[in-house]
Amino acid sequence: MNLTHWIGQRLHRKILAATAAGLFLASLVFLVLFVAAYRGNLIDERANSARQINRFLQIALENAMLKRDLAGLQTIVKRLGAEDNIASVTILNPEGKIRFSSNTGQLDESMPFTPGESFITDNGSPDILRSVIPVANREPCQVCHGPIAENPVNGILVVDYHAAAIRQEAIRTALAFSSAGLGVALIAALGSWLALRRWVLQPISRLKNASDLLAQGDLSSRSGHVGDDELGALGHSFDEMASRLQEAMIQRASNEAFQQSMIDAIPDAVRVIAPDYRVLKANKAFVALHGGTCQTVVGRYCYETSHGRSSPCPATMEICPIELACKDKLKTPVSYRARHKRYNGENCLVEVRADRIKIPTGDTSEWGVVESIRDLEADIQASHEQKLAELSMLAAGVAHEIRNPLGGVSFALSEADAACAKHLAENAREYIGVAQNEIGNCLTVTSSLLKLSTPATVSLELVDVGETISETLRLIAPEAEKIDVRIKLELPPGLRAEVSDGELRRIVINLAQNAFHAMPDGGEFTVRTSCIEDEIRIDFMDTGDGILPEDLQVVFQPFWSKRADGSRGTGLGLTLTKSSVESWGGRIAVENTPQSGACFSVWLPCADAGVDDNDAET
Image (cartoon, rainbow, N blue to C red; front, side, top):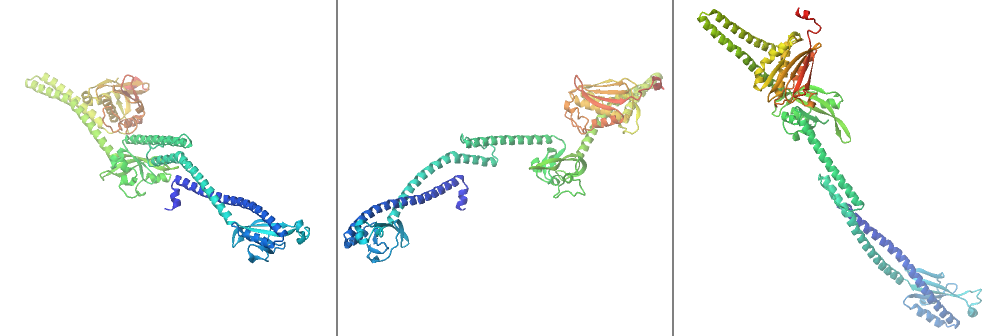
C-alpha cells in the first residue's frame, strides 16, 4: 500500500497532508520573498554606508592629490584595501586606466566602470559590491588637470566591498524569521486541526460508523447528537432517515407476514413464479402437497418443486404458464390438468389455474405467474367420504322407517296365525289387512329411496312438490332426532312443478343437511311452500347462527364451504343445486332471517299456472 493510497483512506489524513503541504509551500515562498527583500534592504543599507565611506575617502584622496603626495595616496589606497570588508580600492584616470590600486598587479590595466553601486561576479559568484564614484575636477585642480569644462572628472574611485557577508546575514535573518513564522503557522495549524477534529472529523466519523452498521443490516444504528451546527443537522437528518427506514422495513416485514398468512389460509396450493422460473412465494398447502417448507421452496425452480425435474418442462408435453406469460399469450387465466410430484415421490392429478401478474424488477417490472393448484384426488376422496356419510345417514333413515312397519307386520301375522288356529276368520283378515298396510308403508319408503337414487335425466316430469319434500325428509328424520332438530312442514297440497324427481329429492336432502350442520346444538328446521303468481316458492329455514354478511355473496361459488359444526364439505352442493334449479327455469337465493338463522328460497315455475281448475281436474 503506497503513501498516497494510505492518506486517501481517511479524511483526517488528507486534511493533515494538505495542511502540511500548504504550510511547506507557504514557508518556502515566504522564505524566497523575504530573502530577496531583506537582501535588497541590506544592499541599500550597505550601499549608503559605502557612499559615506567613499565620500571621506574621496576627500582624503583629493587632499593628497592637491598636495601631489602620490606616495601618501598609494599608501591610503593600500591601507583601505586591507580593511576586512573591502576587497580592493582602485583609482582610475578618466580613460579607465588604473593609476592607483590596493592590488599593485593591476596598475596600468583598463577597467570598465559604471558610476553607482552594483554587484559584480568574482569567479562566478556575485560576492562583490562595487561602488564607482567619479572624482570631479575642482578649481584648485585645474593647474594639473586643465579647465573644468574640458575635463570635468579628474579620476574614478572604485571601491569593491565583500558582499558574501551581506548574503549570509540576509539568509540567517530570513531563516530566523521564517522559522518563527513557521512556528506560528504550526501553532495555528494545530489549533485548526484540533478544532477540525473536534467539530468536523469526529461527527463525520460517527456518521460513517452509523451508516456502515445500517448498511450491514443493523436498523437500530444511530449517529447520536453530533452538534447543533450543519453537521448536527446532517446527523439529525440521518437518524430520522434511519428511523423511517427501520419503520418501513418493519412494516414491510409485517406486510409480507400478512401476505404469507393470507395465502396460507387458502386451502388450495398457491405459488408465485418469476420469469426465470424461480418460486417467489408458496403457501402451506403447496408445501403439504409437494414437501419442504415455505423457506426451502422459495428460490427454487418451479419445475423442480412440482415436477421433480432438473430442467424446464418440454413445451410440447406440458402447458407452461411462464412461457405463455413471457410471450404475452397469457392474457386471460388458463386452467389445465397436470401430473405433479407429491412430497413422497408419488404422482398426483391436479388442476392448475394460472394467471399472469406484474412482478417488480428494480425500476421496471416483468410478467410472472400466480398458480392455484387443486389436488383432484383429495377432492375425489373427500367427495367419496361425504357420499358414504350421506349414504350411511340415508341407510339409518331407511332402517328406521322400515323397522317399525316390519314390527307391525310381524305382530299382525302372528295374531292372524293365532286367529286362524281359533277359526276366527274375521280377526285373521283384519290382522292380514294391518300387515298389508305396513308392507305398503315399507314399499313407499323403498320407492322414495329408489326415486332419490335415480340419476338426473334430461326429460322432466310432473312432480307434486309437497309430497316429494315430505317423502324425502322422512328418510333423514332419524338424523334430525339424533341432533335434537325438530322438522316442521308447511306444505299445502296440489303444488306441482315440471322437474326431475330424483334431482329435486337430492336438493331437499342437501339443503336439509346444510341446515342440520348450522344447528349443532339443536333447533328447528322449517320447510314451507307457497304459490306466488306463477311460481312455487320453497323456503328452507333453520334457527342457527345465520351466515356472515360477507359470505352471503359467495355461498354458491364452487368449493366454498363453511359449517358451524366444524365438519368439512366439498363445497359443491349449493353450486350443483343452483345449477339444477336454474336449468328448470327457476332461481335460488339466501338471506338471514330477522330472528336468527338462514333461509334458502327456491322458486320453481308452477306447472298449473294459467290452467283452470276444471282443466287441472281433467
